[in-house]
Length: 255
Image (cartoon, rainbow, N blue to C red):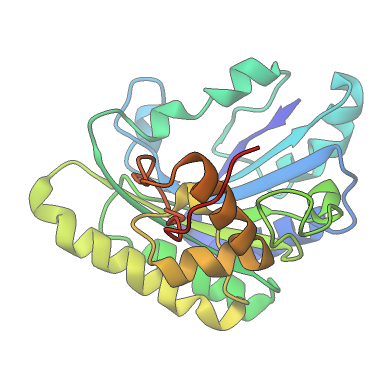
């Protein structure tokens, strides 16, 4: 079951504070993401909404439709939404439900930062960053973490840092190559503005050309183990067009 009510962004701070309360003590079946975007000039939306800045209270309930409708209803009741895209949805359909937000062929530069809290100051900072984006193709969002994700030991998988309760993504997107410099600069400045709320983590899949020290910080104590894996299976660093873990250059015997 998907909830996706869309509200006007003019009153974003109280909306996000309300969303924060909805996430408190949420069961594992509930996963949510609040994000800011500009409605595209598409006939899929009413003309009055096109090019308007909005806040979307997106959430998924991984369970029965009936229980999901009840559990997600509070997100749809903050106020009368401009549009409500909520409804039953299969997992496969959900994976492509928001592909239209990131059209193929655009320019993109993304960064994320994990937060150790989401107090009113942090919310105000996120809202301010979102409002100052130079491109209508940019999305800024806050992911609710915690739950089953946070209960795995840090060394159980490659991804080590699991204790931060929220993550912010700044997904810049634009169409004119001449706009690259201001959009990249805005992304970096927004990331820097949120560092005072962060222990230094991020989600590498949403990163762009991260330096080695940032990659090390994300993997934490797992980094050296991953270097040993890289030494064994990719000592020449063929798979390097990513948030790269460089091989050490040591010769490691296979068995």
